[in-house]
Image (tube, rainbow, N blue to C red; front, side, top):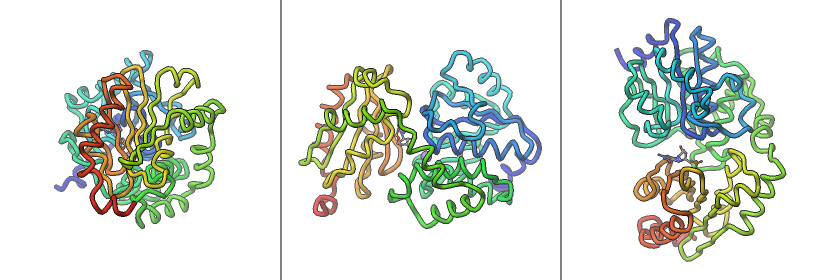
Length: 344
Ligand code: 5GP
Ligand code: MN
């Protein structure tokens, strides 16, 4: 029996299903999880969605949001652990390595449940019984749509499911602008619109829900915390804990900030360093020719996609950005090929 047939058999009778996604879920992570959850509920399964952390409030319109358990909340941990222990099937969505779900990772590794991984990151770790993964996909939501279609269940995709999936594709393509915006992306979102997703409403929920504090924070970051190294084709933000506190920063408030650095003419590598409780969280973005995921993996204990990756640092903020600048300088030849530089 091939892998898809064995997966099909697994979900052919009602099961207890546990769905999780990566820490600090974005629209693709939460949209694929809730899109899949709503589909599996329609198929007659008992489904729990557990996130390893909280997520931005601009995602809380998704159907099923109110039932999501946040494993980082002490009051949710016991019930979430019980759901994981009871599960017949575990879905791991939008991540390829188990350390992206914090403590849940080792619990999943030890679980006897049938594990499914649906994802679009490179180099997936071998932890799943059924892997539905492609780096050609722009978003995990695109793969969830294709899997449901392949299972012959497109007619079960209703407005709620279509909205969840549309949101993930819209944000993981940067609003249909990144190089991953393929013909297939447009074909899939056309289907999702046909199935009930309202594109301008979803864009409004996600992109036009700023608080005044957030807008002021972005203004502050651009005017006071942006460093431009034109000689290195690089620009970055370094945001301290104090800055975040001053603007009463909420989860999701730094989302998208790194793109302002990349939007500068001639800049091919952009980064955002933000000082969190547990160290420095880093976001990397690059223009199409520059592969930033290898750089993130090699030097900052991270990874991701060619043009959008992340990582961490346990050094202080100042030391981290100094190290970053030196590493870009030392690796400029491999980061920026002759071709890339002459195009600038
Ligand atoms: P963001 O900068 O939006 O947090 O993340 C961009 C991309 O990089 C996402 O696909 C995300 O999954 C990936 N990513 C972010 N942080 C990490 C990390 O610490 N490790 C790995 N492996 N991937 C990351
Ligand atoms: Mn994704």
